[in-house]
Image (cartoon, rainbow, N blue to C red; front, side, top):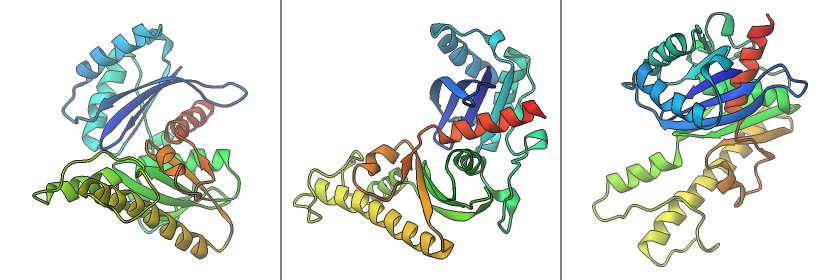
Length: 264
């Protein structure tokens, strides 16, 4: 089995995959823990080994490990986890034998985040034609992948929770609210909480619709929009801009990258 560790700014997601099957990599289970660069390899092991045992998995079933991280400080401790508890030198996505294997057609290719690169790999493997991949994370990213699988660039915007945190943190009287769809289609709120939710939620939908329209115009060809990340399903209920919701896209891109390395 493959153990894949996707390190985001907010959470680390660790998943187990079966590789080599006729349908491609198949995810078996996943776990999530808050990102903390100070968490040691031993601390990860205490958490992970218990969860693996609870679901009937043993450490000796893991024969490959891949790490994709946008938090550089976390890579060392996850490498310690892999080497000490699984006896495996992990693949680091984007480095060495685990280079992306796709064209990164931007001014500074080395600056491309690991999550965005593996999203591009997975999206191109699953969906034909030109693509716009939108990932709802701590930041919201919109990335263009052309019909040949080349990464052509994109957009980085504050995530909706970051926007809400900034609004609440920099005002004296506004309350903290949960991100959810507004209770009605009206965009004229009649109390403070509704007005905040309308501004944050519908403002975010309008931003996405506007940016995607501009991106499609610039691409000049039909482009499918693939959405991933925790809030993709919530927004999908309120807009028709997404052609597919694919919540496992990042992990699947990591598995495809590891599978390619294993075949080489």
